[in-house]
Image (cartoon, rainbow, N blue to C red):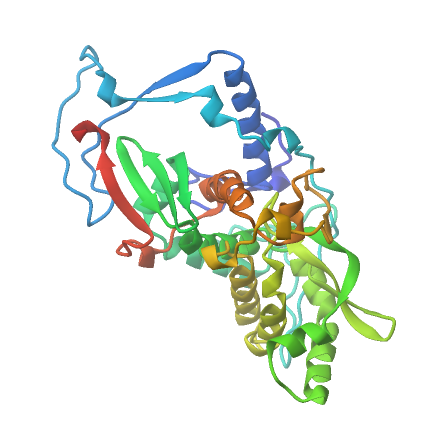
Length: 395
């Protein structure tokens, strides 16, 4: 495989046993879809051998008996997982069209209030600094790299491995999906893992996200007024504050505010994960939190708090936030860059139905979690997020 060395991050492992590629998610999706299409043409059914494990992934999982399995040992039916082709191909897959993202110019260095800017640096051998510079002077800010390293340092290796190697089994309801890892079946709360997934995707795609553009820019003043009861002059100050930060927000987070027809309007939102639009009924509180919850004084804390506010906005909707199909209007947004075309209207309207959430949970959330999510350590003992419900060897 030939690749531009500037698109490889070799400083993720002390002994260079692991490297990271730029646009990993897009590369893996292309490979996955190619394998998927070829396998669908081969057989109507597929059968996989599973390997017994003695490792207890979760503290509340039942202990497993240690067995030695020689190569000549017979594989019984209960040790196999069978799936039919009809189970693997969803109705909406024919709409998916993956295209390469359009490269956008990199931003200038962020200058927080009362702080000096971080100077650009070329590639260096320092273990805690990965700053790349190509023909367009690409760079990764030290603060962003620090946030990425914090996610990895505070992650649970066992759960991260589980999510990277899991096989999606099925959707039960908004707060419950089932996945398989080796011979174990797990119940997972997609909503609980969606926020850390979006947070880490924002940090890892810093300055490289696509855009979700509104057909017509949205005035933000009435949205802020709908979220909080404030004097009109205070609402105007909120609007002016967001407009004053639009250059940095647009370059780093693809969040763009404009002045149009004497009104401050929202022109676009970031496309954090492909084929996903946030629940737009959360837009009013999101705008307020961008003013009140973000630390604009310190660079690292600024990026971290913006990512937190965005991840809350983009997290999967709960059951009470779903809409009936008949209540979903035509799309008011248009996807750019990596977006597929002609997808079901509920995806791009920002109003979720049960069917659209089911599709996104499988094809967006769990697929993206394979490559982007370092599962936080705090979820290890949270049985409302991960719970082993069966061991196939015991069935």
